[in-house]
Length: 297
Image: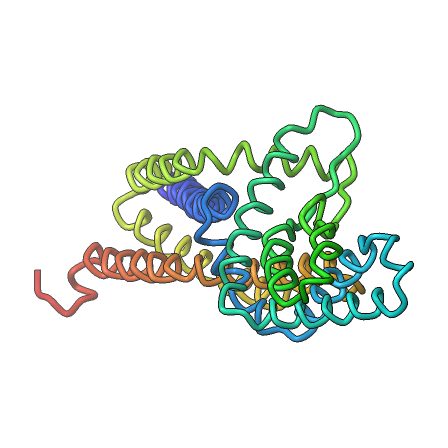
């Protein structure tokens, strides 16, 4: 009977640990989706990646060149002059101290747009997830207009960098969209995971016999530590294949940096599991027969 109760206690405590880790993951995902802080931390290194800067410069330049007024071709050399001004403006934009604010604005806008697109999916055409580049367009346009000679200003002022200026990151299929929408729904309830973990832990300790409950606690804690170590290795090693283009590059960075950020977020769980293991070991020692502890009865 005691063995059966110990097994049940272990299963309940292991389930409590799973609920606790699930709650931590859900809380992280909810914060990343609905608050600006985590996403800014995840993508903070992006401004230092030369591949990202080059891809962004290419998108901004290509967009602006495509919007040079056709009337400029009537003036010999004017189109080439404007193209040179555009290249200089884009380079100056990426070196401008204000580019950090542009990244923040772009990240906030992108995060909100992605969440809205996924939550608003109604079973029709699945959404394409876009990275908003309009804040960079605003900054580049200011640079271009301020640097253009007076005789060229009327032409460059016709260039719009902000209308639908965005990079496609990934196109979801219906199944992926439904899974993402369901995940967003459940992550907002992360508090229930923690509550469930607490209830299961209490019930597991109550169900277990005098010494068996502590053995079960120690075993569940060690299992949790092993699981967290495996998850940590997996998250840090997670990568997605390189693809050309700004959008896929941004998606790759967000995924790889995001999994690393999640791994760091889960680190405190190790200390909780270590504390539980220590408590279990202490409980085993305390409930061990006194003659085995060298104490005369």
